[in-house]
Each structure stands twice: as structure tokens, then as C-alpha cells.
Length: 91
Image (cartoon, rainbow, N blue to C red; front, side, top):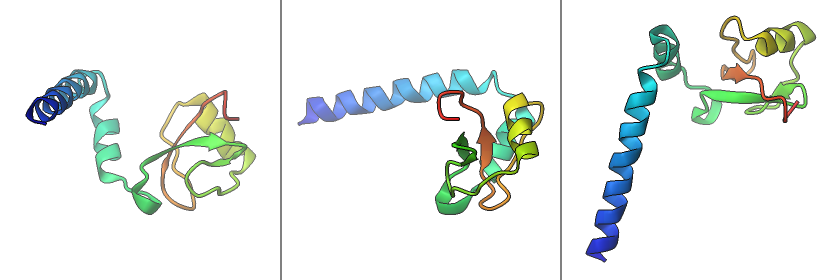
């Protein structure tokens, strides 16, 4: 049991190191926005799924979908407030 717990602790520490390295590459303002933002049910980020928010299923207007797809700026779901991301496989 102790060995298994130590293995889990080691795995968590490795994951934290990976996250710490990844955060260095993220824009500071975007990271702060992510940390501040908490949408419905604690969901901060949602992918567009069938032209709707993947968190609350709000049907997004065509212009908003295009802005999410282009990715020039952060777009929030008008219903739940989640940060929207585009995933070609889900659209």
C-alpha cells in the first residue's frame, strides 16, 4: 500500500512539473483570465460542439462561431461564461 501511495505522489509531482513548464509558454493575461473565470458548474473552457457551447449547449450565433474559429481573441459563451475553443473534430 505504501509503495502504491508513493508511486501516486511521484506521479502527481511529475504532473505538476509538466504543468509548471507549460504555464511558462502561456500569455500572462490569458492565464489570469482563465484563473478568474469560472463558468456554470465550474467549467472554465468549453469546445464548440455542433455549433453550440460544449458546457451549456447554448446555440451560438454564426458571427460568434466564426470569431471562435479564427481565434484572434478570447470569446466567452453568452450563456454560461465559459471560454470557447474551436476543435475541428467536434464541429
